[in-house]
Amino acid sequence: MAIIGLDIGGTKILGAVFNDQGQIMDKEKQPSKADDGFERFMQQVYHVIDELINRSDESIQGIGIGFPGTIDQNGHVIFAPNLPVEQFDLAGHLADRYHTKVLVGNDVNLGTYGEYCELDIPYKNVIGLFPGTGLGGGIVINGELYIGQGSAGELGHIVVRKNGVKCSCGNKGCLESYASKKGILAYIKKEMKKGRKTVLKKEAKAGVVKSSQLRKAVEDGDVLTIEAIDQFKAYLGMGVGIIMNIFNPDLVIIGGGIVENFGKELMKDIRKHAKAYTLPGIYENTKLRHSKLGDDTVIYGGYHLIKSAMSTN
Ligand SMILES: [Zn+2]
Image (cartoon, rainbow, N blue to C red; front, side, top):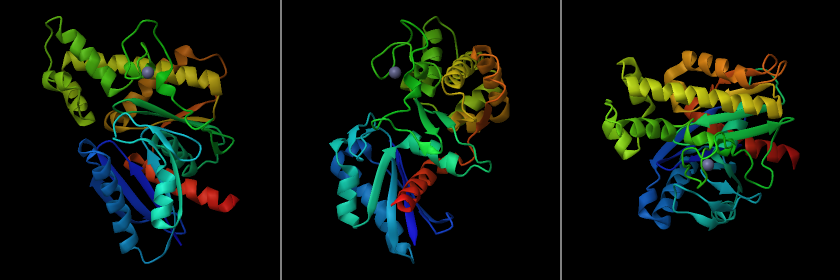
């Protein structure tokens, strides 16, 4: 028996076959080709799944998919900011095509669930925060992924500043507008307008930067990038503090490329900032850790989503 976990992203689609013991047996990665329209994008999705099925010795019992957008309880995609998909029954469509169980969830929700299921310690209440281009979140309560009516966990859109920086969602002052790559670049761009210099001039203008470039700019002593990362840490810490106060969870997991690149020192600063916003007793009993699955968080989430659905049926 085998299960496919799929991580559909704005630029790439990553898939893996998991065996009975939850080990990855095979992987496949393809570009999403999001700019080439819906049909071309779906061809890429089929391509990854077809390759994995064709190469697998065992029959596939289900496909669990993390998708970067809002999804309803039935696996219908409502909206995706970075992919040419809207109001589409992705789960139903793929279930018909592959004659197998297909479940679709928001990618960060599934990433959090994947991290939760792979924990060494059996915590029950875990919150995930994944700063990347934007800032996604996920909520596990009493061992179950909490999705509300489908789209819960949008922790990046908690407003932390009245009339603050404009967010991609249309509001102003969302946590994501500060604690993400978009937020980091927006800060650099704002300061550049005052005539200040930075090695990330090109990236700030284009609005795209790799986490490794941020790390290098900080190491090279680029003052604007250092300030932008300081702001990132302060706001992410504030977000962690807010989340600790609301959920008082066992554990908050921070994942994504920036955290991978900046590592331990970043976590130390986030912890320090979070402490300033939490009530006495809450901070002390909540653990804060960085993701342990790295790029594989979402495919693990897809695998565990199918596995838990099969065990409850
Ligand atoms: Zn927002």
